[in-house]
Image 1 (cartoon, rainbow, N blue to C red):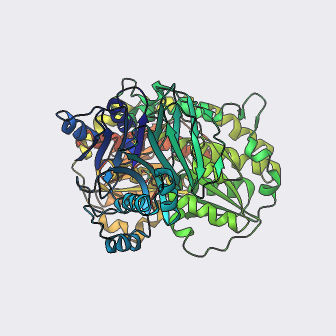
Image 2 (image 1 turned 135 degrees about the horizontal axis):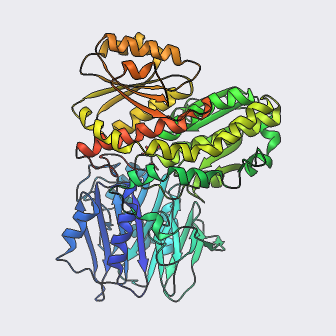
Length: 614
Ligand code: G6P
């Protein structure tokens, strides 16, 4: 996590850096800092605990002059979130300043070596070790900054995206990456640097994505210079950004999360554009078409992901097994990569990641790739690390998701995975043409049906107020809607800090039923599906114990509406597509409860959107 931004050029760097940090705040927000070389050649470093706004307030009375600078917003790994541990960090002589996103795993060994040489450390961070190592290398080996960075990075085990300033060279900005993302923006006689393109988009659409173990040197009046850490020259590949500024703004909504929930009819239309052809009754997924045999010959599909993306993976398990009759395993990336998994050459591994940067998911597919499995990824951020190391994949195309709690990315992942399941099932002949056509046609109706669910926003917002007293929630669902129950519970936990558990409805009697009382709200996802009657019985069991039931049901439901305390109706659809509708009220419920509780919806405490550490 952490966001880094840098600027070198003719404009005042500070406002560009601060604006950039605001854009990157989704990556972490427990402290922030900026380093600037002013016109007098002084290297000023300012830091503040808390969000970027605290840093801005702190800098009001400071000298923020200079046309070169770096800035950082932090999600703490080593050392508590305070001003000392905030980045940038100075080197011993205070000649260099560094910002870093990632983890230096062997920092303790490196630190001990530097301490023996008389270096002192002010912070508890791994990052300070790196800047000291660079300075030590520069001084002792009499090399320039770029070479010192290369040599230092050769000794580093871990992940990094770094940027370094040297006050004796105010015309040069050096940066490097391994495992953490880094993008360079090319303006006219100016360069930008950031963890993603969002701080860059308003200045230029020309970007270079820096690759692992590359070091980039940005000098005014010179072309971008890229070498590996072993000093092999690389040819920069300039790409055009497909991102607009309006996508990064709230567009009249009070929070990004609400905007993103309401965007879903459009984002799903975008995800399906050119892929779902309702008129011709077919689905064309190029990532599948080009690699058909790998899917058709797969003995097993392993899905790996984290957080909300893992829930999308669980839904896909139901769809792939139903349509394609291939056994599916859904794995938390963090567990998968460390448990010596059995991976065969004829396995297909599907990685799901909104950001495309999640460290555990990236490591999981690297492991699977080494074992010869075919890697297919479903990501949102174009050009991110996970799609780049995958053999094939499918972008979800929902635009930037800025709210830390994932909403529109989730529904698009479910759509992408459903399209894939349909492609495999149809091609294998394991699903009937009738069923295939029904689902394809119904997919085309989903955006309009979501629009209808969103029409109940006001009602959900009204009754959400009733539940802000709760300390705990249970969410229940079955089949395709069991993962929806887990996703609903996760949304509530993430943004309202209310403890919530998602359970398969039938499992309730094996434990959670003991928790049911008048105080306990139970959200039951109960659309008309194969197990509907069984879920209705579960609701009776909850009511018999005086629990308060909020039910998500199909329009026209007569049974549940009589017994539940609150009912939210969703339009009828194919069973495999119900998650796309039933999750919407749960996103809205979590959102409104968090708003009434006064929580920071878009940037909930302790969380970050892009988890680039293990
Ligand atoms: C973090 C985010 C979640 C996200 C998860 C996986 O925990 O807060 O919203 O689901 O990471 O992220 P990915 O980018 O891989 O989908």
